[in-house]
Image (cartoon, rainbow, N blue to C red; front, side):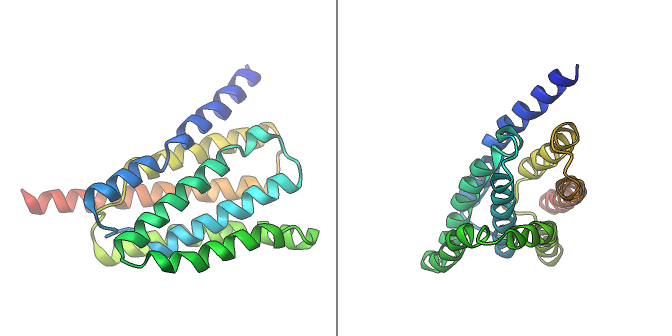
Amino acid sequence: MNAALLWFCHWSTLGVCAALKLPQIAALLAARSARGLSLPSLLLELAGFLVFLRYQCYYDYPLLTYLEYPILIAQDVILLLCVFHFNGNVKQAAPYFAVFVSSWFVLTLQKWIIDLAMNLCTLISAASKFAQLQCLWKTRDSGAVSVLTWSLASYTCATRIVTTLMTTNDLTILIRFVIMLALNIWVTTTILHYRKKTIGKTE
């Protein structure tokens, strides 16, 4: 029973993450605008993903517990390029990507660096969610923000709580996923709230 549950959580998470950002990318391309989408939120999210992936690799955790992160990072890079494109400043993406690439190597120069970064990772990821919430509150428009992407993100956090409890039982990672689950649900409900308001105005 436990093995079957673990298998389902691992592979459903990977399946969902393989397409997690695609609805958001599609919504962005359809709107041809980045309105309602927070650039700081995306940058912070990418930083959080990078640190989390590096931490898991450093401590040699089971591959299936973090295999979705390279996929998420690749999708976030595409999403960021789309945002920079629609904001008319694609060239400004280069310094950010240079920092992210160099950080990959800096993080594991010393054990205390990666441990500190992981402890800060939850704050970084939480900040990314609050940045998106702040953007939604400010614009009062969920415009190009995909509710499906945020709903799927909530699901993957829930499944990763289960897999963490059943495998590594790492408290730092567990706390991160619980907080991310709560914040993802909050963002999802906020998107739906403003989506309903927008629909009401057009009727």
